[in-house]
Image 1 (cartoon, rainbow, N blue to C red):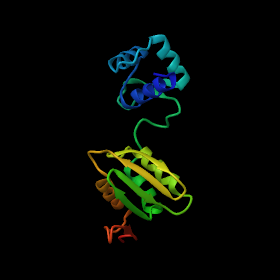
Image 2 (cartoon, helix red, strand yellow):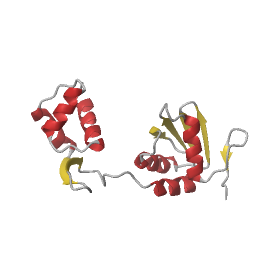
Image 3 (cartoon, one colour):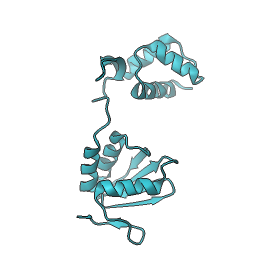
Image 4 (tube, rainbow, N blue to C red):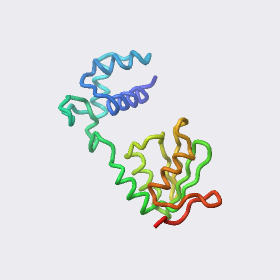
Length: 166
């Protein structure tokens, strides 16, 4: 495992779990078959720009200093962004294609990424298109339906959802 891969995994661990020491990270990495010393992990934490804080429950934890907050963005924010910028949603297998006006796809993708919406593995934004990868157990069709509901789009007509349902 490279240093970059290890640091990425450390970032995932501290984003998803309450971890307060480098020793806890070393143990978690060891459980995953990743060899790292406490000194190495401590250097990684410094390079990643982490800090120790008390979260909303009073627990001490390590977080990324650049993280604006621990909780995901509220669903209302995603609903506003999708309602304003999404013009159509289509799916195929575990992929969802979200169309926006030119230059707006990054706004929707950012809102999706920050929302921690169930069933979303990740997104890639172009100029006017966002490709969203759905978790296998959720599926693209169900995720596309969720997106249409959030965006206020009508139900499917001839395989495409277009226009507001107002």
